[in-house]
Image (cartoon, rainbow, N blue to C red):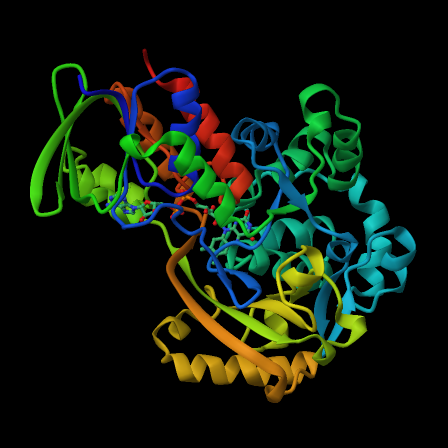
Length: 450
Ligand SMILES: Cc1cc2nc3c(=O)[nH]c(=O)nc-3n(C[C@H](O)[C@H](O)[C@H](O)COP(=O)(O)OP(=O)(O)OC[C@H]3O[C@@H](n4cnc5c(N)ncnc54)[C@H](O)[C@@H]3O)c2cc1C
């Protein structure tokens, strides 16, 4: 065998998995279709600005992510106090998301009925529908105004998705577990905060990395080593051999074959049919029956003086009910150092998602016009203060864990059982955030057969 394991895809999942595998002494090779590594993560550094093409920040939500930082020698940059302030739009005005009981009772974001109802949340019955949507779960346990002005924008910020379609058990398993294990979100959250051992290290703080998240994926690629990474590997196709897998691909005009005991895929569901012709159509249909939110991120550099001090925060999210053309805005330079030159700020404006998939095909000029209008209407940023706008389109940005998820997961387990040494990782299962990706990568490395 050429390798113990071949990993397909060099995004955060593939790179982290290969990094952990290499540390375990496994002979690993990563094959990536594009001419660059990092997948959705890419940082741009230009004229004193640092801005992201994909994710801007993550949450330190598991110990595996901490291990990755420690072992790779890359230090997370923890967001400043501004990140604690999060804005939600209601009736065209930004309101801070309350952080304590007093703020909760004062905020105009939620109705009086739901505020009082929060006291009774611990006494409400557990849900019994395993495929209940997030909107249903939150409306049932807390109330409709909370669903519309907390859950809905929260879903928009994480999944760019629809809370009516995302299934709580799959899309928000920690929230689902709070209800199932402790009978209540409030009581469960209190019990969790008293957690001990490994979980204690997990601060749930917001992180990025100095110089942008690209620093992390670049460091992982460097640690894995050029000799273990093949970029621009096209037409990858796997077949089974007696005790492993043969992988054919084209590279610089040549067709090549490699063999490995184990094969790990980290690509999106949409890319699987071409790579795995040996998986029958019925099973493959269960894997590919997954919607992806299309997201356009517009990185904006603007003059600092254009931002009202009341808006200095992590950023703002726009609930569906507000009927606007953007999903939300992040303000990275208020949370992390070195993101903008003196007198300027960076903003990241998100558009599209499941609310407006049609924006993906809109010409750049029209998108920039909308961004300018929305920033003017919502933040009073005049057009004259905008230094630049850069547009990044992500046609398969975020997989949506909807009702088809149960069948998909069951199919994945069955396929892995049937095909010894095959692991179908990536964000088609186990969570969409960066911390989820690293945890899955760690677990994938642990599953590799010797
Ligand atoms: C716009 C946007 C904003 C986000 N914001 C956040 C955030 O704020 N916080 C957070 O935690 N997460 C966020 N995420 C999610 C986070 O970026 C992802 O979870 C993570 O980067 C996914 O890594 P991955 O390796 O699983 O997938 P990817 O990054 O998609 O990597 C998959 C890799 O596989 C390669 N590939 C695909 N097909 C093939 C093929 N046939 N052969 C070989 N290679 C192939 C691709 O080129 C790619 O390099 C965001 C994502 C996007 C798109």
